[in-house]
Amino acid sequence: MSMEVVVFACQQAVPEPDAVKSLWRGGEVRLRVLPEPCSSKMEAFQLLRTLATPVDLVWVIGCEEQLCRYNEGSHRAGGRMAYTKKYLAEIGLEPARVGRSVLTPGDESALAAIIAEISDRVQALGASPLRRAPNTAARRSAK
Image (cartoon, rainbow, N blue to C red; front, side):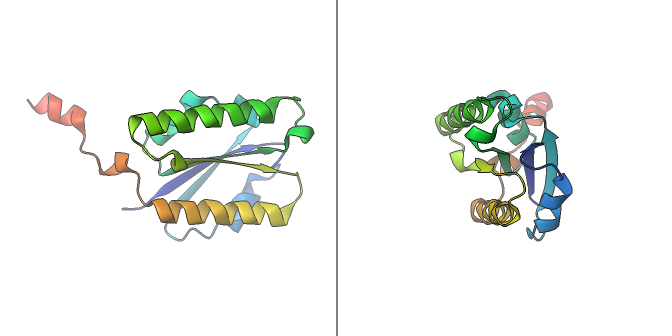
């Protein structure tokens, strides 16, 4: 079973999404990079919905707070990430399945470290339990 990671990348912090893909060393793990105008645009329900597709890990890369063009965008993203992690813990899914990093635009070595962290995290977590769970809707319709 192959795994998948989705990275939502602030267009200010990561102006070239292909840079993320070029640094990816995740082996068999598929990587999707989705540009966002700002990490503050990411809502908890979007992160949760992405995990439910099922994806094995969701990550948000944003600007450092003092560099955010929307002033409070990175701060908001941090609060939403904390809420998402708390919710995941409440429903019994590992909070580590979502992550967030901040990046100074143009810092290629920091971006490489973030990508390595994402790769290490997904390898350590393995496949999402949602991938392994039986399809309950299919079971209900078979009854």
